[in-house]
Length: 80
Image 1 (cartoon, rainbow, N blue to C red):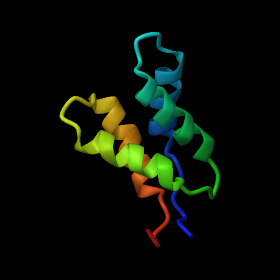
Image 2 (cartoon, one colour; image 1 turned 60 degrees about the vertical axis):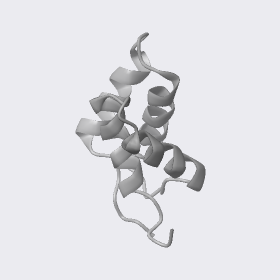
Image 3 (spheres, rainbow, N blue to C red; image 1 turned 135 degrees about the horizontal axis):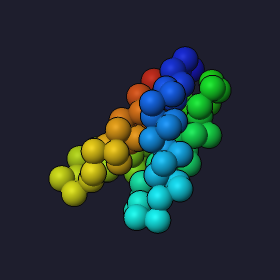
Image 4 (cartoon, helix red, strand yellow; image 1 turned 135 degrees about the vertical axis):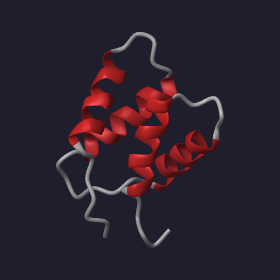
């Protein structure tokens, strides 16, 4: 089990992404998952981990998208 949780800085960025009309659907998906894990011991699911990993590898991802994705990958199951 991973003991990491979403930091306040990432949670704030996630909230801004969800409130933004200009955020992509990918960014909003990552933001929702990050907020769902804030203050909990939940870990990132396999499907969201794959989505976050792809976002990190994409040259087209914004810095906010990559920050959200990085947080989610770091909170994934250590067994995967």
